[in-house]
Image (tube, rainbow, N blue to C red):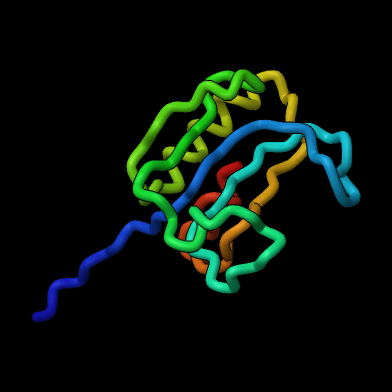
Amino acid sequence: MIAKTTVKPTARLVEVFSAIQGEGLNVGIRQIFIRFGLGDLRCDFCGRTQIWNAPSPCKIERSLGLLDFEIYSNPIPPAMLIKWIEKQNLSSLHDNISLTTGKALFHTPFLAQLLPGV
């Protein structure tokens, strides 16, 4: 009999923080930004070369807008990110979440667990 193993999904993140959206349809709206690593297109406009390889540490903002980050080791499990989002959104300050840089869809199993939870 072959033992069935289950691999829990994770994602390699660069940083997670709260900010005001500065472009697009949601300009001026407070959002939670989840910056993914592992972009493969090497876009010139991105200017964030650290996402290409996804650094081993992930920075998660501790206090809204204060740029004080806690450092966690990558990869990050969905439950940890859900807990952080819930903590930061206690007073319903955020209208939505921005999945940014890298390729979020490289992390489809992670997103399948994350998004229903937030």
